[in-house]
Length: 362
Image 1 (tube, rainbow, N blue to C red):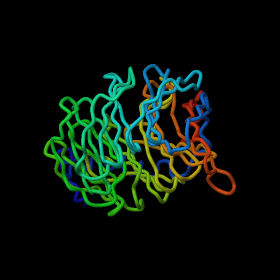
Image 2: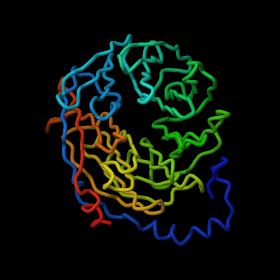
Image 3: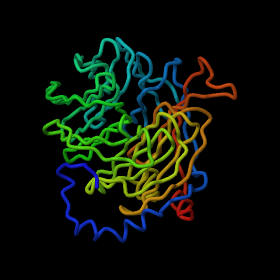
């Protein structure tokens, strides 16, 4: 039995056995990868400069997209691909997130370690906060709870900031090789930890580690995304394996094949390509030249939905929550490997009749 223990995992053996019929069925769902995902590129934008793209934030109504690259935040007009604005930063940016409805963005800088708060419209720095817990490696915003989490893999720490006051309210030591974070919106934060092949759970009210969800057959977890409604956690690992975790019960109830190897990031969204698309989908991409997807058929049923080939590694990805598609930042490669100095290309992937096409592969 898992040693994982927090408020959301207080369940009885009666509940466990009640779940066994669908659990047994799900263990055999999606064991074979489906065909190629029927996606198409609807927009291409060449990112100015040659620095890696650390993060992407879709703008309101799908008309603009924000990119963190090098020492800049860049904003592009989606329809034309033209650069619409640039925000210079005092140091290289490592990650970026934004509260789009509030018009506020956050950027984590490397040296010196800083958190930059900036306005999206107009694009301008509003404040700078010194970080004392180590060089930041990732940001996660919980806008509903006015909380911003700053992870430092180098400092083995996790800090919580109040977005209203801008103050650091708590922090904890979280040893290990920390990667992507996800929150359930109910007071629990999850962190992929490669050092012990598990997902660490953190009580965000007390900022204490409450346990870990072990992963069998999925080494070095890096990508993490949350379905906050069904309380399912999607994990992608460096070895290509993927898992779906029931966070109520605290264990991975489904393993899925995959071939997105290396450092991987994952995103999840409901109706990712419009109202007529899947109920939900989790997408992962990284160093291997392809995108892979998990389709949510129901809250208790998931399947390997297929892959989409890329002509390079994916540096960042983001889902437009309006259902307009999936943004990827692709660093082109050639037969000889990465093209030195080649610009990164932003691509917006969309789909038509995706639900019908994928339904045949269940």
